[in-house]
Image 1 (cartoon, rainbow, N blue to C red):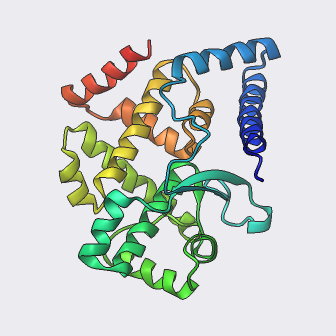
Image 2: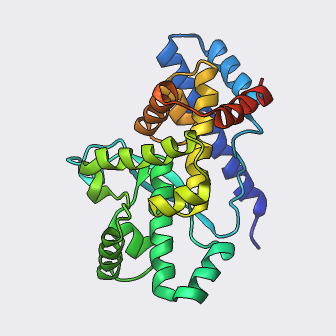
Length: 263
C-alpha cells in the first residue's frame, strides 16, 4: 500500500528547503541576522502568497525535471553544471488535441518541443537534445534534431543548451514580445508576428508583471529571479524594459492595478 503521507512529507520538506535557501540568500546578500531574514520571508509569504503559484501539487499534464541552469557557462561540463528544477507541460488537452486533429502527430510533437523548451528557459533552465529525446519524449535524438531544424526554418527560435552562445538573440526575441505588449498590441497580433502561441505570450507577460511588482516593492534582481523562478538575465531584461520603454496608458493601468491589489 502506498503511503501518501510520506509523499506529502517530502513535498513539505522540499518547500522548507526553498525557504532556507531564500533565508540564506537574504542573510548573505543583505548582511542581516537570521531573525531579520525570517521576518522578510514571512512578509513575502503574506504579501505574495496568493500571487505566486506555490502549489505542491502538479497540474494534470505537467511534470518536474532537473535541468541545467541557464546561467551556467557553455564551457562547463554537463556533469559539473549547476542544475535547477523546472515544471514542464507535457500534455495540454485544450490546445494539443486541436493541433493533432488539424495537423497530425508530427506537428503536435514539434509544438510540444517548442513549448517545453521555452517553459524551461522561463524558469531559469535549459534543455538538451538528449533531455528531450531520452527523458521526455522517449524518441530518437535524430527525430528531435529534425524537428529543431524545421522550427528554425520557420524562424522559430528554440532555447536549448546548444544555443546558449546565441543568448543575445534569445534575449532580443523575448524583449520584442514584451515591448510589443507594452505598446498595447493585442495578444493575437503578437502571436501572429512572433510565431508564438497566445498562451506562451501570456506566460511571458505574466512573468513580466511579477518582476515589475517585486521591483516596485524594492527587491533586488537576485531575489526577484529567485521568487519568480526565472534566470537573473531575464529578470534584468524585464527590469530594463520597464525602466526604458514607453508604456501605453492601458498597459500602465494593468501594472498599477496589479500593484494596488498587492498593497
